[in-house]
Length: 454
Ligand SMILES: [Zn+2]
Image 1 (tube, rainbow, N blue to C red):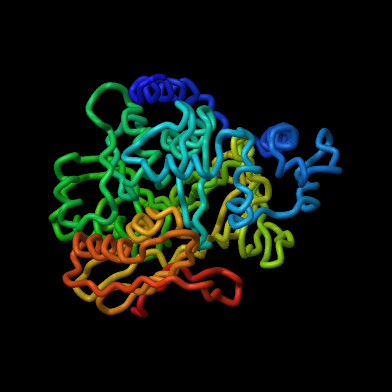
Image 2: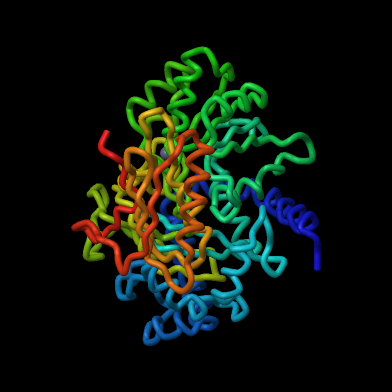
């Protein structure tokens, strides 16, 4: 068995090797991308048929050697609930059972490999159901490259110091990706300063004034607060690249960033299931990674939505994860996708509008801000939490949980209270109750985090 240090050094070296090839794919034409998707799709379907009981049943009767993207609607969609209920049969490696993967994730204390090869990350996503996603060695490299390959596209320095503000828990994809990428620049000092988005802003400001990153990336609400700190003269860094992810990027935030640092902020989008969109030039819509995923825009009934029209959700076919095949996997992010050519020359399709990411933080009267990731981090720490709904109250929050097996709500309540106190709320009022099911919105979506009306 190799040590963690040996493994991560090797995996990072493998990533460095693939970096340039991966960057070049960003400028592929639509035709080349389409051919690449078809080749990968057939390969994925055949692999899944051969190695997974679940997919063998689902794909039976289809001619996989001539299958095209246009044939995808003949396959059923896959929901997170179905995926989790059939986890062991979906996986193409028989030893990656839900019990083993759960056990690995629950004992994570920092970054770690499962069987010297795999990484597992947890999400509740916008749908509220706990999901676990497993990546093999080269699959994780591909995922990390999708998340970062665009950074040098306009001639930026790939080794520029970066400040990031997301979750730091390695159960969460942003924490795991950070742990993996931080030494990418070599053996020198850490090029990335990763500060938990849940830290009080004055502490983030001190950290940044010391580390002096020139690239800033984080939740839109945190970037907004930092821009205001810069305008107030307390934050003295001079970033030349700012991007946001995971929350709505509003015009207010764009204006604040422009005023503070004289740069345009880029919006990005990504998901734990394996996709990151990449920014084009400022003010232009971001591109989908059309070389490594098929994304079908659909309506509430899973019927296709034409390009240029708002889609209620998307169906993802991840073309590179063969450990845990996701074929027509439902993601409840609303977006509008367009396929017209972009001035930058990239043939990757674009997203012009993303919704469904609004309810991602709670703001309290004393200015304390609690991000959904802070709450998720606590609640998903218990593997028996299946679904959650968190409603902000004046002095804290009310949590409803659908659980399976043993779940100690008193422990979860205490952990939430601790997290709230650490974040700046004194004497928080928290209730945690178990329920049979959660109430859904008319669209069928779960309103997972409900802030107080502001
Ligand atoms: Zn473009």
